[in-house]
Image 1: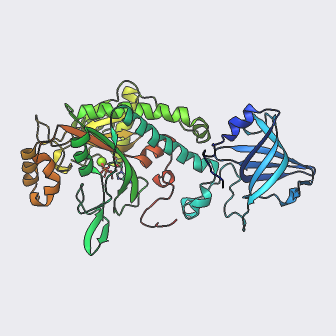
Image 2: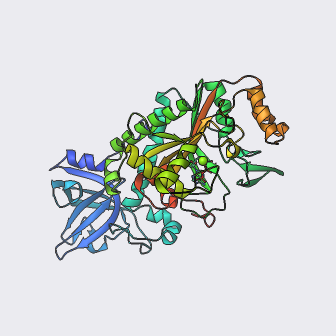
Length: 442
Ligand code: ATP
Ligand code: MG
């Protein structure tokens, strides 16, 4: 009987090869590209993270014929590493053994071996299990993974507890008609359009909580910034003095995330030609009313939207932040209460305004957050003022009824942050298998 006591170690092929210059190495990967010459071929092997140039000399190695090696074959190769400045990462592997682990049964449907495939989204998205193999495409999702990891690491370092919330729920948190209906054993349920209620409950229990989870919006948008399923980076914190505590936490988190991405994704950032923003001590912040004033004075723009910023205005405010403060981010605070959710706390000085903010990054909203109502009477009054049936919210207001600390939090769209960080023009590029109105597959 054989006992396996240790997990197989992960091999960083590039680091391993660089550490064994002049010696023999063995690693596995997929044939990414073959360039043949009369006497030899360059076989570029795509490993988990990098491309490695291998040199196949002669007509055959250990029974494998040179002419049989083709794109998309999965191989285990052995050879001596030597310096080669013209190759990726500055080395080349001179093959002495090749083993075939897997093989393609058809010609690749896309030119994976090219530096840029130049595919339209309509061609790319249906073929995602294959197109994501391309180094540039998969780099996006390494960066996205680092954003989520950096977020989690920072949150944990600040005493937040990693929570999860149910995604099958009986009502929406944000209201509106953007809910997907689910048949739940004969009764009507919905897919959660936000973890809002649950993170509020949990912050009354744990003090500080965060979640990385799926969010469902049945919005009939066909825009470059909306998905019907996205990943929310959410947090909620208790014992705050004001929403500015939430904004300060987000600032610290984003600074950490940017450093984390730079530290962990240097090859990907280079491949994607991404420009990671500098975040100073604080992110500039203007109120919603100031923003409208600024747009009028600086850009001669008369806003038609009394409750929100439209996409053009988000761009304008980011242009202003760049010019005025040299910042790629800007907070907009104190939105009119009327169009903010019923759980948002109103400003004590002017109840027409909510203690609610958005964060804009490179011309796009990436976050909405704020301070929440924590007092039971205040929450009941607000529901009543809005003509909402408070009895439908008993499972929510139970927490207020039995005492809640002052608290607040935010939601940040992972794909939106990825898209803005990497300068992608459509949010679908920042979602590995996007759900939009046309797509349920792959
Ligand atoms: P927008 O005004 O751009 O439609 P929103 O204000 O409706 O967004 P929120 O409910 O505030 O969105 O959600 C919080 C965050 O979640 C947003 O700032 C954004 O980053 C992200 N987000 C919201 N809706 C979507 C969506 N449909 N697809 C991808 N990300 C989204
Ligand atoms: Mg919003």
